[in-house]
Image (tube, rainbow, N blue to C red; front, side):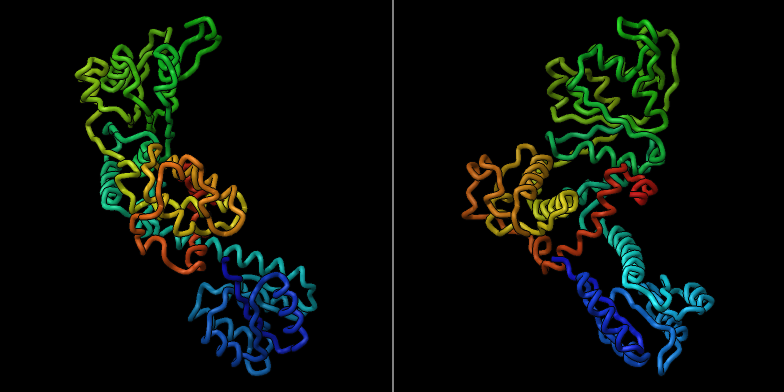
Length: 440
């Protein structure tokens, strides 16, 4: 369980201290009390609270002076000032001096309760931002997760590719390994990140439909073409077009794509006008394209035009050290989405996950953890929540070693990391648009 927030209440009136302690503890907070400025400073030195409620009138200190002293040593501590009726001017001065909010005596509990909730929400957002700064150290890079040597190499490569905003990129790797996530990272790390990232799966459409989808069409180009329609190349103009499963396209269609890559222009289906476009192409495949070339299923000239820069996203079975980190990430993500507090998997389950071959790669692991979180009745995943096929294909009697740095730590330390995923999840959901993510 995540530890409760701790509040220090500083007020010279014993009845107010008693009232706030009882009411706040009922809301789940830990509450410490101080009746003087000296007691307050001693308490702050002993242990920093998450929030301070401070009366401006104390028997041995001026609350405004105390506020200034605290702000000099702890500029980020949320502080709510309590003032008497008629002292609004002082309250305004307190806000200018760094107080988060003020409450006027006499007050009801709902008033100060709302003030505390607002201040702690701002604190939580600040903590999330601080946590986001350390995503690289935690093994995350724009949605990709891993601390294994191959993933660290991939992170470095993605950063280098991002500096060139026009070079075509070919990403290889098994289905579910994270090729589209890598493509999005390339886009977000480039100068094109303020324009569209458009993805299309070439394997789901035949040549005719794919041509209409990518190139667009004019009115009357075919039976159902009742109006002009821009294609995805035009939609992605200035940005990045991700062509997934490029190995499934026919050689005839590859010729049309090659022309766009070479000349930077296209014609809509049924149209005769050439349209200039400025699009970066990132393609991906789970096939061996050199083998496809040898078999006559893929054009060699198109391959070399695509393969200006290539990178591989390794299969999950080739980077098992990343499994505990991925499990932790998905636990936090789905616990957040489903409103549950599932914070760990037991040792037997981790052994099973580490030994499984993961033919569906990260996507299969993600689905497995989501299912387990849905089914979990406590705060830990057991073998009862794993799919039967996984249990049938894996023996957990001799589990692979679990990286200690990834899975150890107290429950508090593990659940505290949930907060950073609020921003991480929002950024992924809104494609790393920080403004939209902040609004949600």
